[in-house]
Image (cartoon, rainbow, N blue to C red; front, top):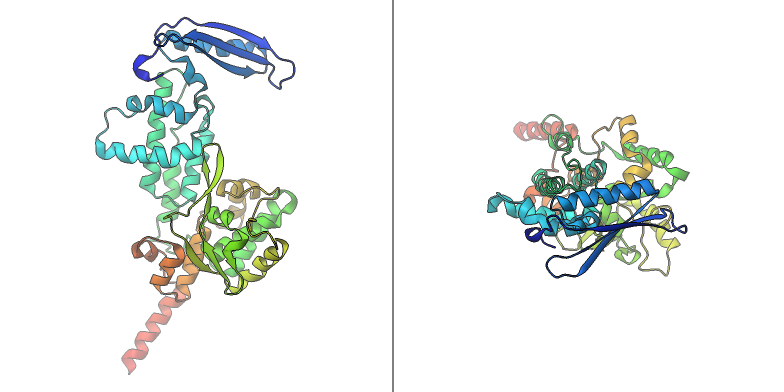
Length: 389
């Protein structure tokens, strides 16, 4: 039912059914007749006890008396947003509305759209937004996506579905100030050297349940290939050429309605990435174990599940580990920054670095070209030799 014909003062009937074979044995159900098409409608909710079931019924009836469509109580965020979007976005100019709707369609719905509106919490939104940051989305992209979510959830508050807006979170912009303020310390986003990477990988494994070595290997692989965690999750055996030691990056794992899916990489273009000597033994061991399985994933979780930046963070206690090691601002996406920075330090030409990174323009790639102290001193020495001639 669209918001233009909400059933004000709708007459409802309700009952509670006990089912002893269910984890939540009490089923609360509300029925009504649609005032427009005269069809019978119903919604239901499982509850652990009779009081909780009756409370839910009371909430539905109170909302319906105030003009809220009862069906919205069981709607997913994507369904609810589709119903109330004109109301939620009213008053916005086209230049603001368009990026808000793009953020809703490309980030909010894939990440949260499958969840019921009443099940979205501040913590869920917080983790989602920081996940967008870890995936490398820019500040304005995250801002527009979050703004769209805030407006839709504010409409849910007005409709009486929730008591407060869980999308009004704080602190996420501070993450950008830590990550992108490179003037004082231009190398803050990258690990300093190979020893630091190995130390990080070992520490993450040590903090994980069962000391799962795969977490550390995925971290090392991501840094050595300058890849996103979603791309590391998406690599299959057939994508690796062990003769030339090249990885063809052609897919990534990303959240979507109903769970994780594999799709084309950001930019929708495959790219080739060199596998350096330091990471080849790791890759060779995994290829040997997966012989005859070209479609097998090279990296999975301890139970064979797909990797995401959030899974890696939670399973390894990432925030605690990086703080203990002195890398407080290090995000999972900074493994990619580490690889690109190291390649730039090694003298990889910027146009080649752009192809490895999969960037659309050289401008994006150039932000990784931060010369270290040795390079700066060397440049001065080279100038002195030139002048001496």
